[in-house]
Image 1 (cartoon, rainbow, N blue to C red):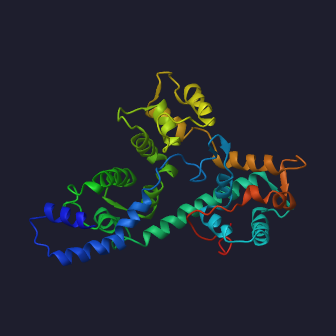
Image 2 (cartoon, helix red, strand yellow; image 1 turned 180 degrees about the horizontal axis):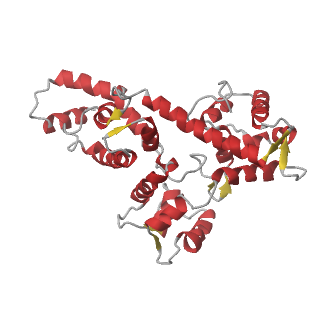
Image 3 (cartoon, one colour; image 1 turned 180 degrees about the vertical axis):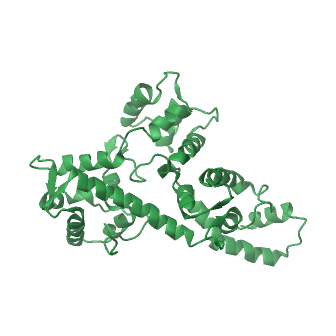
Length: 333
């Protein structure tokens, strides 16, 4: 923290800022704005998936993906606090919601509709939560300056170019902001702000998703993702010389057979797009098919309440993630 203060003083010498006043300012920033940005940038935006979890992890099926797709991130945390009995009871309440036509079965379409509802609810809830953190204009918009102040602690043009710790993050945010700002007034309304926060869910933001993915994985900065970079993103702690897990061989084959379509040994931006946002692939439909396949004992392509409860570990889990409570809310589905 002291290094930050000295850096700030050195680069802002044109302004006379008393040391203790500056210290108070920095403490305020640490307590409010900066952690918000740090938390927001922990995970790279990649793929319009149903979960922050990978569906296949270390070569094996990851049930946490299913739990988050079915419940939403908020509900996963709620279920983590429940006993097995309470978990099954609350799952039963969800099943009653999913069975829209009240015929005693959950069809593939009903399950797909529920999963889509859960995803939209998360985006709406997250946008509402973040929106409240920012000062808005009389037109109910957030200006870039208000975003800068709340997120980084200072207005644009006031020394931020020299604060190296945040320079790249600000540049990246600005680029995403400008793409989300469809009416080009340098302000975001709530819909535009939602696209800024969740660019993977907006058609016109897809190029930003690809670009940010490239920047995060492309370690040699040549504008492509080679095989080692592709594998390295899945094995961030792997050390050269250490044996690779068995599943890596399968991922290398995936890279050669499917990711690198033109067989030049690397993925270009178009190939990255095909990887992270595949055309004509419906994640919700795929997940509903997967859940039914794994739980449908009598193979009639629909689920009874008992079939779901018997496979409750497929639908709800014990691993917590980072947001709220869905069953205790009385929102409409």
